[in-house]
Image: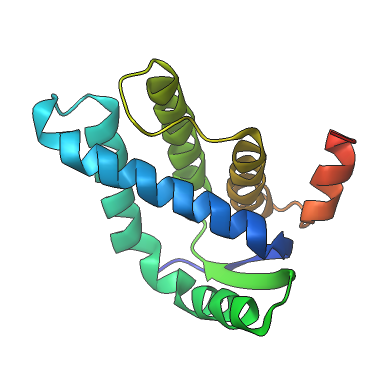
Length: 155
């Protein structure tokens, strides 16, 4: 196994993460229902296949942070700092997942699903979260959620 890289997620807003996770779960459930109806190059099949692959390759690296998030949520905390020890390949995987999720949103906007496209807050969160893996694997320092929100401005 290659050397692991530390990726730090700073100031993750637990409420935004929870809403984003609920939306993603809803989308994935609907995609799973229609998976068999479409060809293997269709968005639902490609996204579900990628998620299964990523869970197999990287799932064990997220067990500790997932427990930390759940504990913080149960304590009523609003934000949490997380550290992931991941192989460098997670950067490319995060980029691929982000592109497919953006494509899935386009699929939702086309009106072919009951699930709505990811709300703007969720898109901003997803891009920040996945970008952190790409950026930090590439040697850049962590960028906290608050910096992203300051860049976005009032709104």
